[in-house]
Length: 151
Image (tube, rainbow, N blue to C red):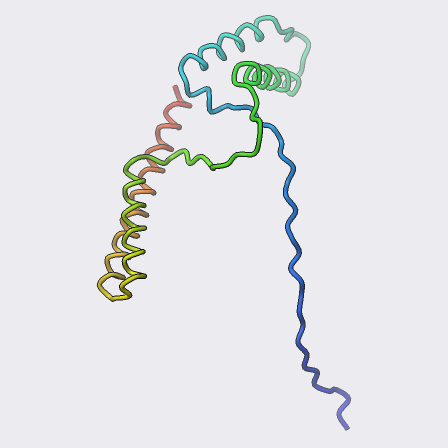
């Protein structure tokens, strides 16, 4: 006499809604790319560093003081954001990437419209080309950032 019985059932789960995160204002550090703003920031940081009292502090205290000087200066020079960002900024995007992605989108639309093997192959080629262009743009921008940090 078996003690186990087969149980079959259908289960339904309700998807929970994700709650929106509250907006937190951020310092507009991207304004430091402008030469005038960057120079103002450097001068302000330099002045505050000269005014600060550094004697008798440990390494962590030095770091905290330097960090607060840099953040306060950036806040004063660049300002804060007013609302949530509407478009995410892609730091490596350029015209070459834009052209490659547009071409890929056009080929995709053509493939979906015609539904032929040739159109699909064209789309796959343009997709591969767009991926290559994106990766080369990212690498180039990463090298530029690394060189800027070393200078």
